[in-house]
Each structure stands twice: as C-alpha cells, then as structure tokens.
Length: 618
Image (cartoon, rainbow, N blue to C red):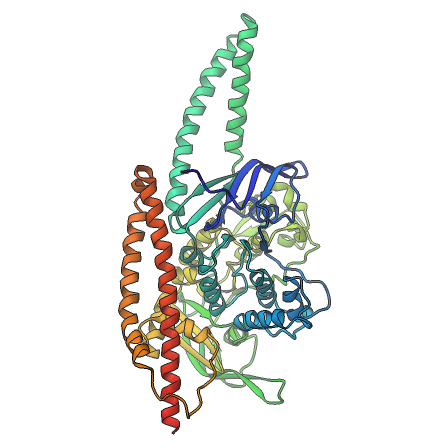
C-alpha cells in the first residue's frame, strides 16, 4: 500500500542563522489524520521548523510542498497584534470577511469567542498573555484548516481552557502538529511523535507516551555506533601514520573516508550537553513557614461594588512541604501567593511568617530581566566575572554552561533569547541564591522536556518549602504534596495530594462519577429553558436512550483500551502493518463514537434537568 500523499511537506530543507546551520537537508511531511507532536531541546529549532512549515519563514535551500487548495493555520508561540482593532475584528479577519457587515461571520466569531471565554469588544492592546493566546487560537480555529500548526498553545492558559482545547483538537479531522511542554496534553492528544534532534527529524507513529523509551533506545544504539566509529578512526589513523605516498591515488580515497569519519564524530561530540540545575538550600528557619487564619481579600469592580477574591481561607504550611496552587486565570492565584508570603496585606484575618525566611520568587512575566542587559551582567550586575553558587565561586560563563548556554551568548542581550532560554536564565539567577522558600509562578512555560525533568528532580530534592503556581497537570502530579485550588468568587479549598487526587476529590464532591463529563458539561453554554407549558418529561424513546448510554460508553471505553493495548505491541507493526493500520482506524472510529455518545448523554441530561426544574417551579 502506497503511503498517503502529504498535505504539507519539506524536502531537503536548509535554514541557517548567520554561520550556524539550524538544520540541513531536513525532510518531513504531514498527512491527513496525523496528530503529531514536535519535541526537542530548547534551541533545536522547533519553532523555526513550524514557521517554515507555515510559510512564515523562507528556506535557505530545499523546498516546501503544499497540496493545492489546502488551508494551513498557524499559532505562534508569542502572538503579536497590530495596534488598534477589537478581538472580534481580529478573529473575523481570519475568514477574510468584515465582522461588522457579515451576519454569518459574526455568528461564527461570537460562537468561538464564547467557547474561549473572550469578549469580542475588548481592544487587542488590552489583552493579557493568556487572552492574546486565546484570541490567536480562535483566529486559527475559525477557518477550519486542513493543517493546524500550534506552538505552545497551552502557555499562560488556565486548566479549564486547556481541557477545552484538548476536547476541541480531539475532534479536529485535519493534520495537526503541536509543540508543547505539557505532557498530559500530549499524552491525551497525539498519536505520532516527531523528534527534532541535531538538525534531523525522526518519526515514531505512536503517541508521546512512548517517546522516552523510544528516544533512549535510539540514543543507546547511537552510542554503540559511536564506539565502533571511534575504533574505526583509531585503525585508520594508524594506517595514516605509516604514510600515504605509495599508491597515492588509491590511498587518497581512504584518506577522504577518514576525514568523513572525523566529521561525523565531531557532529556527535557537538551534540547539546545536559543542563546541571542545582539549588542552594539556606540554613535556619523553624518548622512553621506560613500560617494563614481566615484571610480575605476583595477588589473594587466596574459595577461600583467589590469582587471577592479570597474569603475566610486558612492554612498552615510547614518546612519541606510542596504546595501546588491552581485555578482559572483571574481567580486570584497571584493575590493569594502575595498574601501568603507577606507582600500583600489581607483585608481580614492574619498571616504569620516563620523565622529566618529566605525566599526567592520566579515571576512568569520575567519582569526582573532587563532585555537590554547581557546574560553576563544579569548574573553579575555589580561587575566582575564570577558569582557565588552554593558557597563556591564560579565563573559566569562556566555557570551559564550548566544551564545549556553557549559561551558566545554570555555577551548577548537578554532580548535575543527564546522564551525557554529566558526561563533558564531566570532559574540560574534564582538558584544561585541560598533560599529556604521558593515561589514559582508558571516556571514550566517554554522549557523543553529534559529541562523540565531536571527542574522536577531539583525541586523534589529541595530541603526548603515550595509554592508552585502551575497549570501543568503532570508537573503537579509528580511534585506537590497538596493542592490549593482558587475556585473563584472567594472560594479557596485545600486538597491533599497531586492534581489527579484533586480531580478525584472534586468529582466525589459533585456526586458525579465521570469527572471529565462534569468538566465538559460546565464548559457548554446553557441552553434556553423550555416554557412551563411544554413537555414535563423526556419522551419514552429519549429516556430509553439516556438509560442505555452509560453502558454503551463503558463498552466503547473497554474496546478502546483493548485496541490501545494491541497497538502498543511493537511487534504488531513490524509483523503485520495492515493489521496495525486496521486497528488504528478502528481506534479512531471508537474515539469519535465515544465523543458522540458523551455529547448525546450531556444533551439528554440537560434536557432532563431543565424539565425537572420546570416541574419544581410549577
């Protein structure tokens, strides 16, 4: 069976920045039905590759192919907006129509803005980072593209919006390629993995959940090949020492092969190193770090009243605890953190801080970084060429190497760095200072997977106390000891465990067994209530269907689990590719069937609740 013709492809693509080639002779393609993630280290060229695929960046060599009639949509990592204009106008412009004049376009725009919780009348200049990302995403989705390219779509978004995007992309029928650091997002969404490593793309037709085992297998195989290469070079160099003057023409070919072997070895040796993150725990401090009693905070709203942010919340945080703080954007997470660490006074209640606290604070906005200052001066603002790290004097350049910076970057201004590099620079500054309390506000944004793992290991071994504001579900699950959920309208609750424990507890509190359905239901727009003179209960047919749907969904879920187990067998694809393709198609169909069943279940449940409310009102 011939492979499918790609919708979008690169052939022998070449891109260089100055004298530094980013990738050379890179070939890849995306076909209909691909649901792929692009992974690789910070600086490997992931965002550049997406720009090339989107047609935003020209190639230095090679070619880009787009099937005729295909629509490609692209969400950049940091969306930029032209000054002036509203959110609705910006989104409508994606359709090539005037939002104010076309009723159909206006309806489409209003619908997608409602689903992303955006006010179409807002001016683009007023948007926060998360709002701007949602606005750019709305413009990408509204055109219903054949190929969708997303660069860190979950950055600066809250969990309800991330879950909505997951649900929306799960229904997307075109080719999808996404860059993200959110493991849970990728595990839930992908079925293909593209690894960009040292200028080449390697493909695995399995979800991101299989990436670590697969990449380690490739690296182990490469290490064995490098060992054989070293031995071959050693033999060739011994031959070279004996001279090549005799039989010169025949020996010149062998000499050229030796030079090729050396070049190949240089490529291996020039591969990026591993970050060496470490944090210095300050001595001292008591067992109690923070004690909050019945704290409350409100801010004036536009209606002339007060908006409750936190109401009567109490907690005791002890030394060594790792607290995750989550909630929708704008609910008051940052306000709560500032009150807990003493930077903002509560309206009511009290906060007591432990003795000899030495806190460090990671700000997701990176406001403490001067874009015009060099990396060198960011670490050594008072001059000199060294800093103290964990009681040891370190040269600035050597310390920057620990965080995967090249030597020549030390003299470059901060504004030249990527988002992930800025985060690594900020972490390098924070971790150089002894502390016994670390406050991290969205530290995982823009970091690659390997640096995330190292950061997690460092924080897991940290002897001090950690307050972590994050929407990264996997990071929370693997690190924190309890969750403080800022729910909005002043409600703040604390739960023992990680994110999964929080979800399970919340589901039990709402009396629903299927937590994802509860979340999906909360995200749906309310439907108009029926008049009291209408039907009082579901029809016999609808009631029968509602009663049968839970069993049907369970049956589909069981079959999906069986299919996923079968597809996870590496021998299946090698031994019977046709059977693998057939099972993969069946799994995709089962997902669609489950989505349709869940939607129907929600629709009938809402109808039943509305009818029940009408009967009660009567």
